[in-house]
Amino acid sequence: AQDKTLRVEGEVIYSNGSSYNAFQLKNWGLGYPEREVHPYVDKIPNDCTVLLTHEPAYSIGDFIPESNENIGSGPLLDRIQQLKQLKLHVFGHAHQGQGIHTHAGGAVALNAATGWFEFDTDTGVAKEIIL
Image 1: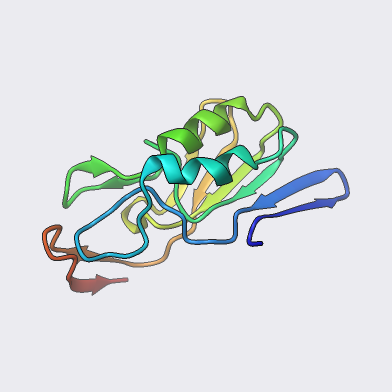
Image 2 (image 1 turned 90 degrees about the vertical axis):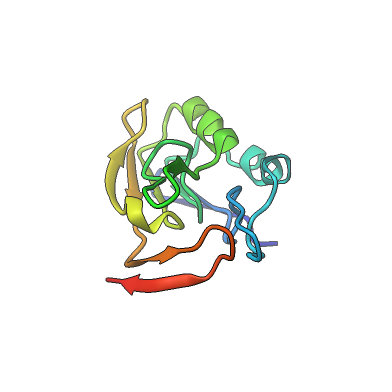
């Protein structure tokens, strides 16, 4: 199982430990339809204080200028809004959105992705690595 919950000195840390993401490009194998992402979202404990996921929540550090769209997960955003004790959400995937953001409830949202690439959305071929 890839999903893990760790309790350390009052903190409840949850990691889905995989590359789940709801964004799909042609010829890319990591995307899942939103309905298939729900199972991991539903496993996040109610008392979670630190959340580690591959993908961002919808509209939080997930904007991709090349395609002019947000690629985060709506179900993940909905679940995060239910987590009253959440302090920190660390994620990646949306490299162009790297940096520190804030969830509506006040939790810090850290897009820890490094570098990014420009890509052709029709072929999924990376054009250039930008660090």
